[in-house]
Length: 425
Ligand code: PMP
Image (cartoon, rainbow, N blue to C red; front, side):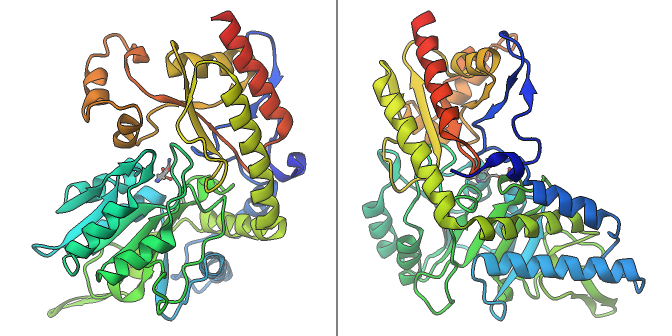
């Protein structure tokens, strides 16, 4: 087990509950993780120096430029980027990365994007508005047989397969390397939305010559123990070259003349305006901490928590689990308690026990609707019926999600809390 007190900034702060103040248990890491203490120290250290990058001759500007570009290198190394082929673009978050990419892929008539039934809205909506096809589900997993046959039947026509690296609803890890092979065989590229994967498992984009190469990868710093405001988009340098960027402004042009605009080279062309230098520094420091902890410890700790939580939920009566697999997943576990609305469970855990979980649809309504066997518009219809803010009408799930610092005793407290909930209600 990892020792959280020094690792996490502000760990175990007390929060008010109906029973008095209690140390907070954060089981909502899929939404955002708290920062590493080292990240906050790096922020304070470097905040004395930060300045606008790429522009000034002064020491501060030079220093900040060097920090910012070093952070870019660290991010690339973290996922095995070949900088001769790929570029690391700093964005605001995963959502920003995916929207940027949707701008860059000029969908010619007859070309298609394929996404899957497990996607977060951020990796569904940018594609759903284009000529696209959504791969269906086999239970809570992507239907691989359908994926194979669809790509075979439409080889040459599909431009991109957009898929989650791990689901923010069920924790399910799609077989991204197999999917990369399927996409490449059909002449398409693959995009991995790694928002939920990056803090839980190592990602290797692999060399571009490898059929399992991941062409595009996106993730967010605030799910990796660094603050909000920085995301990453990785992809082939060539794609971002010579096209007007998704946002124009300072840094995006080399020159403007009678013959038109000469755009900057990537990544600059996609980073309009003054960038979030401190955010990039924070992310780079978080990645350093990941390396020092080591993936083996992170994965092992999470496995222990996952196994015990699944055991607890299986032993409780009237609990439905939406992904019971102890392996091939990250520590995102969703369930429902029969006869109780998801919000009722979440509020009980928070207000009585100081345990923070999330409830609802987690910005993945299509997936949640399928998991609950609802009609495709059920959640939308329920939401439209909300009068006086009564979310009780909207279907959804309860979600427990772990960070690398969570402890078994916290899971035992969750077990106690849920048992009490069932005996009281
Ligand atoms: N994709 C997945 C799978 C996610 O879980 C999230 C965040 N919940 C996002 C995309 C969007 O991330 P962000 O809010 O940082 O843009």
